[in-house]
Image (cartoon, rainbow, N blue to C red; front, top):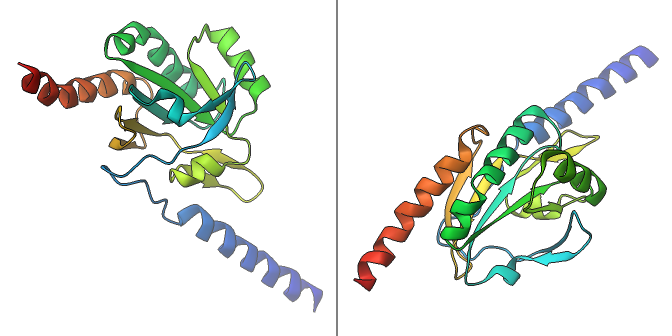
Length: 184
């Protein structure tokens, strides 16, 4: 009798877990206002999305500090920091890791942009970028390019970390072209 109960509980648990893993993550729509948030970064300061109004924001979500893919992606964003500055753009990385983990990751990899601690996963969830594995939640590898007025200009889902920064820069240049032509 108990074996049947335990087996049934196991099947129910597997069904719930697989449903959560397969549940669709709805990304914010291009053209919609970016959801504001306030999170702490690696140095403990509070960062709000609205602090960067007037600049392009590359808001990238990643699973875990110091893992191979996340390290490659962060290194690429760091390598291209001068290019982002030329384009009046700021890079903000978000994961469910805490401030201490971000601080160690930045020190180890020489990262000089902000990594934000979304420990509860609320911001990741709002941006359709939270993966729930039952006992743990991590951010999914998605990026949002937010325009200087605070609107979603482009969404990138499931990106390739080793070439993603170059992809973002190319899209940023593409989006800037119409504005440059209007000024001429």
